[in-house]
Length: 124
Image (cartoon, rainbow, N blue to C red; front, side):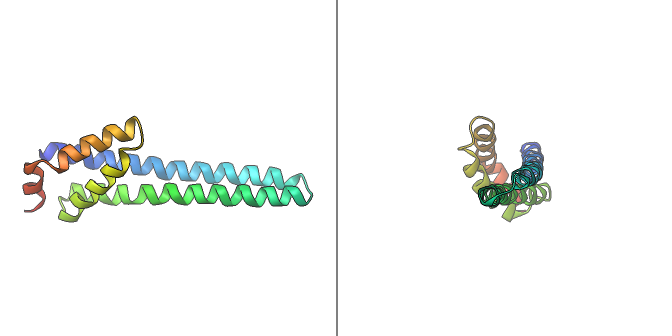
């Protein structure tokens, strides 16, 4: 079961990194589009650029808030920390709604975390 925990830890780290890369990409796209919209001039363009910028920033913040806990949990799982199992259960349950890859990761994570050998492994 230790192999499954390590695989799951790396999957959490990789998916967390993808979320952070996505946040960076969204922020770059929003910055470019906001500059283009703002360059059009006029009051409507300024309002549109502001709304677009705020929406993009909110999306980026959401992605960062999803990515960082995954990376931290993955590192904790590699070190077999007890708190990482609890955080992993929560993150796995949250990923069940991200069909299809997130659902597969969530099901795999819940299977690993609720296995009795995993509980004994992280409680050492």
